[in-house]
Image (cartoon, rainbow, N blue to C red; front, side):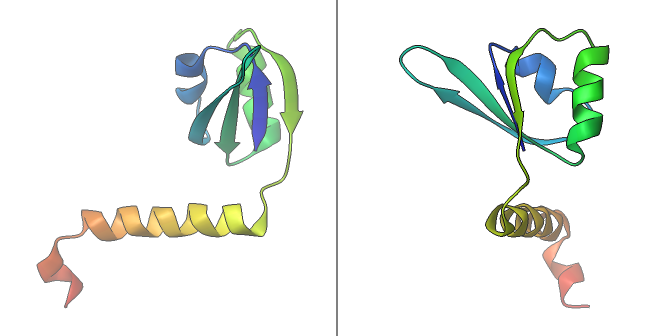
Length: 88
């Protein structure tokens, strides 16, 4: 999980490896939390793309966050399969 301050949300969410983004706002600052597959690769892509940012911090996902990400992907896949194929 990567947190950034003063960054263009649309530019970030288009980068490869981005799983999910969440905007965080307070009275004096707007930041973005980005869940990525590989934080090192994401930071390289961010810099290579020339996306301006400040206040970068990287944190490992908690067990709960990993579980929710995995189960969300499973729900998405299950929803994409027609119901009549699931009983087969």
